[in-house]
Image (tube, rainbow, N blue to C red; front, side, top):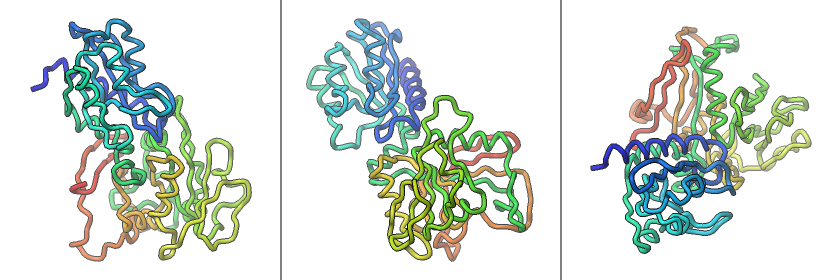
Length: 359
């Protein structure tokens, strides 16, 4: 059974890992804490950006000679390969670390094997401490490795009766200012924000992060099948963040001066798997889906929604569009059942986070 000191150190490592959300792709977020031979913390760090030092290196630099004979607590198995940086397993060995405790094994075939390298050098190794917490904070990268596509979080805001707008189309503002600010946090943790042509026409969204200090701006993606929704002067065309317009292979060329990807059609829209593959190729490991009910339905029908975040406002409308349209569900036996992982009060609203049962 893990000692409380081990749990405390690993939980701190998980907290540190979360600081890298939105800034490390295509790499994982990782946190590390180092204690000396007597159990006192002497170093900590996290992976800050792709191509930069890994969490273990930051921690070892802070610990210095005090790392010798100590313990390293890492949220992900120390890497075992040389990329833009050297292997962390070897760095820990050279620093004289006597024990390594890591939470989640590395599923990347190019980087795995760090635990074996450590053991071969005489380092005591333990796996699995707080693995659920470490997996949750790194779920986007882990999903991308395991499934070969970005992790998709579908976000929506709705009334208690499930409406995202009134019957006349008005929707500002259903949710609270606090909820809207929280959405900017979700954007800041994501590599890409995706909307459809309906949202582009109706709302002229900006999609950039505001109010989050030090945020790395996500890629703004508009699924504009017929290449007619994004007009010159659209807010997504400014220089606040990069933008990608996804259009059909046979569509006319859209507004100039913007990155465009042509994708195969699927039904009345574009192929969702092809879109996700194109984003994955661009280094996108996490997607925040902010589109309307039609685009959300296409992602659900494609089995491409990993997490749902709903902001429910204490409001009733009685009519107007629902949060989800279609999704390939025609009978109650086809309903997608969810596991609620968190409920939080945000301003006057309730934020509910859920994943598909068995995911």
